[in-house]
Image 1 (cartoon, helix red, strand yellow):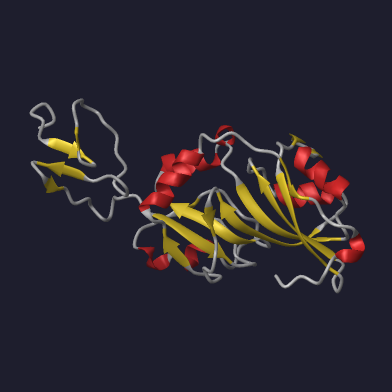
Image 2: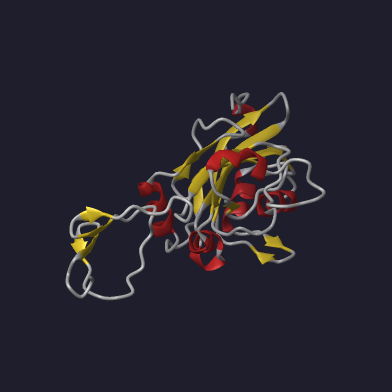
Length: 243
């Protein structure tokens, strides 16, 4: 059928054998008729707002509550794309597409991840610069990051910042802040690439839209950035956070 010119993908005629497609995004037609994909085998991509206390593992006899319990209504078995530790909340991607998961988690692709951090003490401009330029951990120095000052909470003596990292080491953000002397009190992933958590309620999920899947895959080739988006003010000017 391909040799006869009867097959199109996204409106373009296929002229060679072995073309790879993504059934969740691409439209395949034969003689103008749309081919329906098997819902059981088609790739599934979802975004979950993982709550604190929930483990991002498929199976763990020591975990009383895992993300698998939150996605039972998806209709097919999906797996976490990377992990968030049990005390970290926020955006967790889940899929049954191994290639997609690989591209978003492999170190060479540098897909950015952004976290909202509430850390003990006042984080100075010098410390923020240190976080942005790279911190020496037990498994090597971290890649350049982006640090954005949000607020200082006088009531809890905590600084609220957003940090964007370009790698996914185990408990990386917590270890970075511990190393610079500001232990993390609260941590939430608020973005994966340009995909934002927004107002998705804790413990709920939604399917990704085709353009969101395409955007994530395109970001898998983006180079890491660096720098501080906004330096913190002097300590006395901070106000209580409303976040």
